[in-house]
Length: 131
Image (cartoon, rainbow, N blue to C red; front, side, top):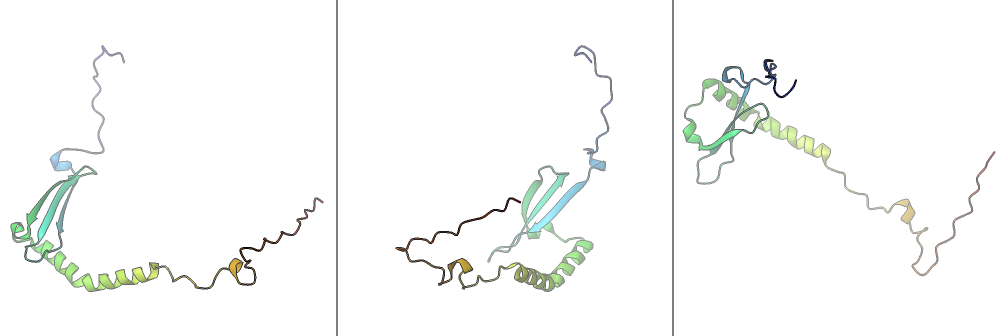
């Protein structure tokens, strides 16, 4: 197509619609750790696809009454925290490196060590069989 010809082809259908009613949305509420003497802060974010989110940090009291379904979900999480902590601790114990052995590697055993002023022994000659 030349630059002078108008583009009459319709836009191809997008696999990422950006119309509000058909858009997949991701909304998150993140309760920040409570600081002594202050009320808990909640970070609220909203985004679509992998775009940058829009966010606001509010005081927990500004949320008001949460819907019953969210209250039930958060209650289940609260009750499951001891089990989750135990699972985490068990996983950490499995991934911790074992303490290093205090025995020197075989190449540094006392019988093979040389004194600094002693020349290193010559290696034995190497023979290679060709046939």
